[in-house]
Amino acid sequence: MLTKVGHRTMAINRKLIVITLFFWAVTAVAAQNIHVYGAKPEMNTKALQSLIDNVSQNGGGRVVFARGEYHVGQIELKSGVELHLEEGAVLLGSTSPSDYFQVNTSPSVGDLQKDKSRLGLIVAKNAHHIAITGSGTIDGQGQALALMIDSLHHTGERIDPDYNVRRQRPSELMRPTLFNFVGCTDVHIEGVHLRNSAGWGLSFHDCRDMQLRNLTIYNRAYWNNDGIDLTDCKNALVEHCNVNSADDGICLKSYDPESGNDSITIRNCEIRSSASAIKFGTASYGGFRHIRISGIRVFDTFRSALAIESVDGAVIEDVVADDIIASNTGNALFIRLGQRSGNRKGAIKNIRISNLTAQIPFGRPDINYDLRGPEVDYFHNVHPAPICGIPGNCIENVQLENIHLTYPGRASKSMAYLPLWRKGDVPEQIDKYPEFTMFGELPSWGLYLRHIRNITLKHVQLSLVDEDFRPAIVDEDVEGLIKEE
Image (cartoon, rainbow, N blue to C red):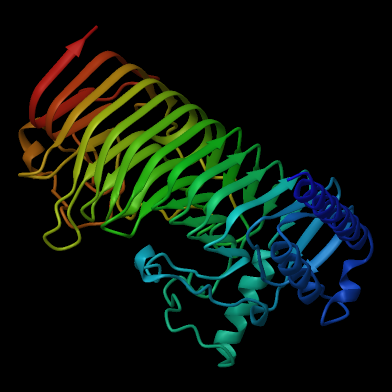
């Protein structure tokens, strides 16, 4: 027994020596000009990928990027590997589309084709215990990359089958995200500065046990620049993140009818967006359960501070949102139960929203964005916050408590007027894309409630800066409406 223990100790010591030397070698390589190991003089992708592969195969470890610029194409993060960017380290994504490749995915993840891009600057598939940390920067150089993709389409060298002719831009299928992680567990992203994707920013599909902390995300280089997208993920924490995005800030999606997002916590984040700050959907095939949102600050956001949408059959239940303050935001709250995917009926129930304060401007809140959300194509007065189900499928059990919404007023009857006796003329839009502007002109200025069973308004204060001829609240087909002062 003593002999075996002695041999085991010697083996462990040798292993520790090997690991120590290996970490020293990794740090030494990172501190040098890592691009000398690359396939091309100006790129270091091949050498970096080889290093990541070796670290993973040898039991895992930390790859350190010292101060300096690293020009990379798509790299794959492997199990057990941490990429650590020291202050002043910058990873610059390649602007050549040929440096990005499709991520192979398992059919069990759902239809990721609908979830647009399977490309990414940093990708991971079925990896565990992975991390990206530090105070450095990852810059996708997304605008230059997207314009190159666009040019190659028009020259016929790289045709985009889904090219958006009306908006004159390549589809999301062709534009890499900044991160694209699929089927991963034990994911830790912390501290880094993330910028300029050609498409979505951080995209996670079917991942679990995630922590995203203290991230600064500036994603306004091109169209569809979401901040963070969680698709059918489980047990995820997003906290202390600062997101400034041309599209949705933090977005929960579901493409797998047998899956969904479960046990997601989003707290203490600051968000600016030319779309919505926090959004459930639009893709909503599975479910959204046990979601906790708190301590959110929203600024200069074109659409909703909080949008909760089930239009593809998803069940949304047990959602608690507390302490949300939105300034200069187009809409405070949008809850929509629709049915655009055939006969699949979804559900929204047991929603509690408290301590929500929002200030709605008269004009565009995202006017200073280079890439602004599309204009509504009809004249309208300022929209109220809609909470709307559909006939025969009502939203159930909603509690709004300590809600303070300030609207600009200044409504006009000249070009938009829907009196209360015509409130039944508001279109149902059962199978339409969900957005708080989807119903056209509405007969109230504060809240619009339709097809709901059991909703409590407790300490809900709606105020106007200027006069509005419409009533503050209009309800239709609502049972169990309780108002408490």
